[in-house]
Length: 123
Image (tube, rainbow, N blue to C red; front, side):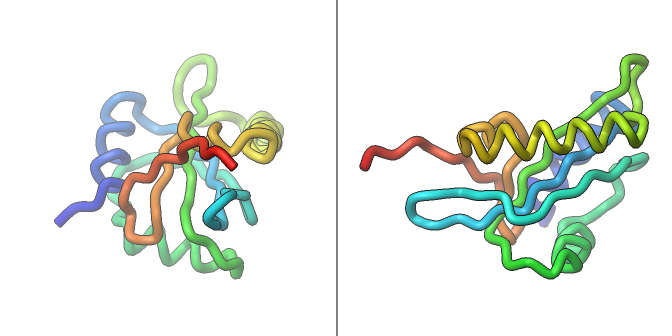
């Protein structure tokens, strides 16, 4: 059975072709969702399974409860140049730290590859 992640990746690649993906590992508590590690990669195909992605994420060496992916495309389509991707990653990190609801602008998954959503709570 394919995961939500695998369905999303297949659809995203069919829509855009190769792209840059911004990856934020997130710790989730009952009252917060904060990024703990981040990176970016250039995806040139949609063949990655959730177990393969999860193995890569585990290599970060940080505990995480969820992962958010944001898509970046160059002006002509395709992956962003590395200097642009590095700057954009810092912007995405800052946006999520300032407002965790920004996670909903990307694709947010739990450790099993199931789609998540962050909702605002009242104290």
